[in-house]
Amino acid sequence: MTRDLRALPKAHLHIHLEATVRPGTLAEFAAESGVAVPKTLVFADFTEFIEAYLALAALIDSPARLARVVAEAVGDAAAEGAVVIELATTPTWYTDLYGSVEAAVEAVCGYAAEAAGRYGVWTGVIVAIDRTLGPEHAMTMAGTAVEFAGRGVTGLGLHSEERGFPAAGFGAPFALAREAGLLAVPHAGELVGAQSVREALDVLGADRIQHGVRAVEDPALVAELAARGTCLDVCPTSNVLLGVFPSLADHPLPALLAAGVACSINADDPTLFGPGLLAEYTTARTGLGLDDAALASCARSSITASAAPQAVKEAAL
Ligand code: ADE
Ligand code: ZN
Image (cartoon, rainbow, N blue to C red; front, side):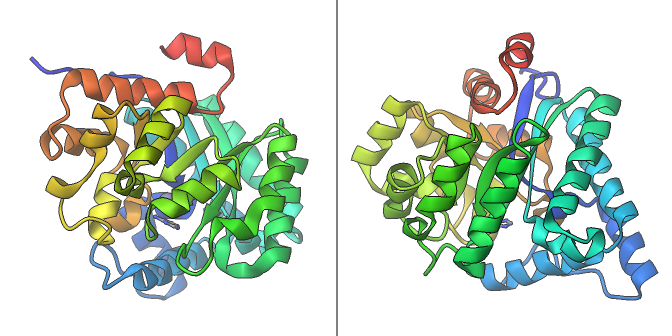
């Protein structure tokens, strides 16, 4: 008998709000808006993937749609056995809908709190910088995140194209976020190698790293991640579909765990890649060969490394 993975208490720590839209909801939105359903599953490269992502975001063009997407994301998390979810978004996409970026974040936090209550899933919001949008945008995201620290926002993220937009350029916004008690949760080590993970630790003071998997290219860095207890929020299917690794057989999650690195398992962008959180745990079992002890350790790490309060963590562990 293998362990029931749905029943394993876990946190979904690396999940982009706009790419949680259920396939049926997406089809409805596209039909109502009279546009084609954005491309999914097969992407020529990261640039084509980001275009599909932005097409998804463009379909969330009313407060009712945004409220529904948040509620369905939290509902799906509950159905998959998550007790915590941290939903990441770049709120500038909703500025026009709500009149200001602050009002947009307030709305997302409100929908998240309502869904958390309805489904019994502790829910945080990660406000994310789009690394391609310049320093002013980065500081606005940090300032807005700080304004909502303790009122729904739990972390500052760093999304989109890693190549040509190194962490070194984002020290100031992340310092602001960390001073306010937010978690620093940048993407690193996805499209760029170990050096990017090193910068996320040294320059941004990363509490967790979204992906971080290419740290495996530097054994000293892997040892440091293990010693520090920095959790990598790993997304196996995303990494294969975006060509970070040629196949699941080449994925370093088992090696990182064997080296003592804390790792969580996540879906990243289920609308675009297919599997949700539970399916990613199943993939880690069947495609990566993780046994029940390793899967339970990933679930435990996800809870421990989350932004949830201690009482929520203790109840789940
Ligand atoms: N935005 C959505 N998914 C992403 C990913 N995997 N990497 C960077 N930015 C993203
Ligand atoms: Zn991501």
